[in-house]
Length: 97
Image (cartoon, rainbow, N blue to C red):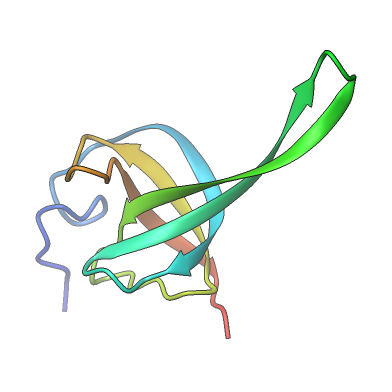
């Protein structure tokens, strides 16, 4: 059975652009939404040190992928899908426990 979701980036008609971000799903409680936490480092020139930072991105979670909390996923930029979502989950790299 193929996905019938029009907002699905794989089976629907939403185009993807930008770059892919890898992260971990920390919440999947909202309907068709996954909160993905992305860890990255940034350099502080004044102190000549690197900082570890995280950002939490709300991403569209289509029914054909169904990413759950703890999964390592790839998200990619799309057009604005709702007030907070402009990313979509495209694949699950590793399923969590």
